[in-house]
Length: 342
Ligand code: SF4
Image (tube, rainbow, N blue to C red; front, top):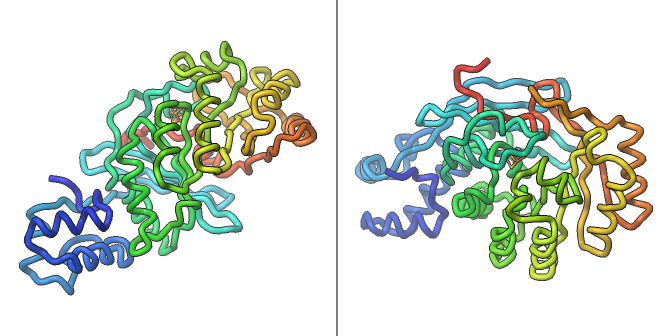
């Protein structure tokens, strides 16, 4: 049985039509789910008892249980959610001047094996359904009594390894009759699954694409990010150029600065050579500490030097504010914890 939260409004209308229900019923259900954010079919009080019974017989109602919630001193909050099958994922709420941003997970575990990322530490279990992605937003909005303004697919998992469910979730999140989060306020981050960059370019979705680049040299990048052995930097850049040409949208390149690995002047020159003239932005991220990995953060002075050098050479670069590192909620620190982990 599929969850009711797997369907965008048009699909829900079709589903209800099969149950001999009029399209306006789907609109009512959609409003209960995403505007009123109810916890069960029983709370949908303007639907007849008969229809509520039918819904219960045909659809699951996905609700994430909050197993733990940690708060950072900077206001960031990290949730460990238990899914219906007992698996667990993490979701991070961050406060910015422009609003509340939620970093969502797209899979239970991740296959990509990036060396600087804690999600690599545990095996991949499965991809999330669209309902399980959307419910992360609903669960946090219910818990905090807030409205999320931005969603970033930068939690556990490679979103493009779960492409269809992620895109479907974006359509649900984006719907004006529901959560109504503008596509321009939604970002998808990929480690570089090239075929899906082309696919996204051809969809009519105005979301932001982020590329986890981290290295401009194939040899080093293949060690840090094994996906580079399948799709190297040249193939990745070709796909990025196609994306920009097709959408006229700026790409954000993520670059985690690791002391002695990718933070010297040659690396900066590599970035300049690779990105000069492209419609893009570089997000410099001081790499965060994770268990069992020797990587050290570039010191603050060198991060600024690296940023300024890029800016002076025509590459727009900023340093991302570090949020939530004291609760292991910062970039690269999320991992697929067991619900029994503390
Ligand atoms: S950085 Fe992203 S793609 Fe790489 S292992 Fe971590 S979650 Fe997976």
